[in-house]
Length: 220
Image (tube, rainbow, N blue to C red):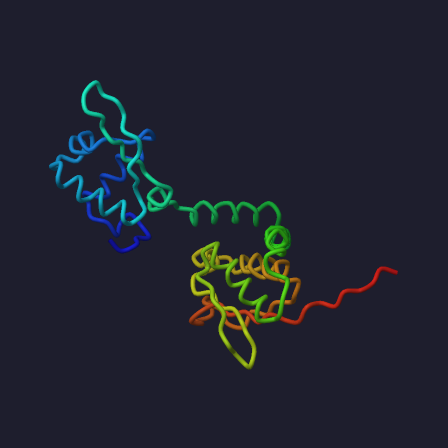
């Protein structure tokens, strides 16, 4: 079974099976799934095999029933992550409330502060090494939080491209959200970041140029 990114990519029976497991923290047996889905044992086992192969479900410990122990099937985090979460709608509401109460400058400062804090936490995994190594490690950090990022060679240097802005829909309404990205990258690398290309402005990716490391100054 191919990896899936959302519940809608699955057939109706597999969607119902995952929903059943979502409501059963201790897992469900094949018999219980048959009753819930209205399909045969063979059909349930085929769907379970596919979902196990996709990393969405696992076979847990058998539970004594007084007769033959029944294996329990459990929903894994990857399966739980397939269920929709409307973060964008909630985040938009929060951001609009902040604009109303703190003003544009306040929101910009907040986004930069959050980006700086998270970037500082990632700095130990990014800052060491050559320019190319820093770009590569920054791409890895961005990729880990959903940006689908990689390094590219442009103008004789290594730059970073992100193909999936995690704030894309939100940024369409509030471009200030990009201040988070820049603050995160500058704090993670200890270097100035230049936004060379942007998905919001028709680019095929968000592309970033990483400047030279800032010179360290001795304390007076």
